[in-house]
Figure (cartoon, rainbow, N blue to C red):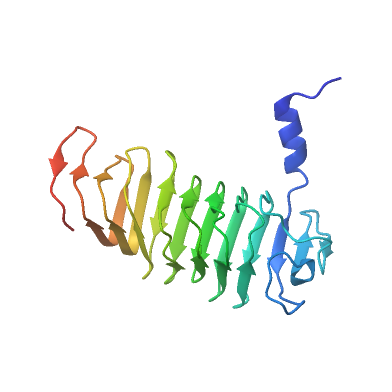
Length: 212
């Protein structure tokens, strides 16, 4: 019997696990297996992991021990699981023009993500920033049509434009939009500061001048 696509995807998801950064190998490199432990989601933990997470890893990834982790690109970084960087940890890309492309969820909870020399930072999933999280400056940002940006507790993030299909949840911190900003009825504002350098456009088509 042939498996349907849905069944195959469900089967694959059963094997999803979590990579946790330990830094045990001591070289600070993402692609070194000895720097990771792996929980296969059944309670079996392998440390060190048999292999490092790939550039297109679908497993969840946690870096939260305060280390600085270097990703040396062998291609675009395209994680589709949840990547959590916290506890003062930092993940940065060194060298190359590979484009980070966040397909899953990037959670910066007191952590830093620096795309380095990447030509463009693409966020086609969810970006959550809390507890003074930081994103390094990329030459260009690109956002998909169904993103959620959640920003709070002293974090600051700057990007170019926001379309009507994107939701912003602002619980504190600062979001700077250098271009146009299109509001979404589902946007949530519970604190913080939103600064728009271009026009602000409502779903009804009303246009407001730049401001805060």
